[in-house]
Length: 96
Ligand code: SF4
Ligand code: SF4
Image (cartoon, rainbow, N blue to C red; front, side, top):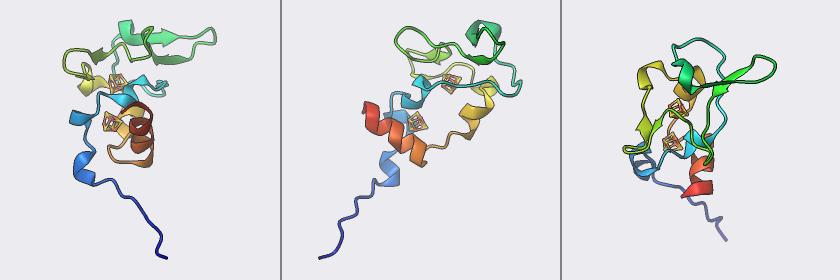
């Protein structure tokens, strides 16, 4: 019997139909990309992450559009997070 392998069509995976699932993840700041101070949380050891709000979402997320409000200055980790990647699909499966 052939194995059933389910593929999610790439066309269906898009940030525009996602509600920014990955913007609930912890994002460490490991290089200076110009993120404005008010969006940065600093821990007791001086480590910096994107400040998240009580509901878990990144403080830099525009709630009207569900898009990044600091896109040009977004952290390196956000730049590396690829739409359609394993991590992306994993986050979508948790929230959508
Ligand atoms: S990268 Fe993936 S998880 Fe993040 S907003 Fe886009 S589709 Fe959603
Ligand atoms: S900085 Fe922008 S892309 Fe990165 S988690 Fe926050 S809202 Fe999402």
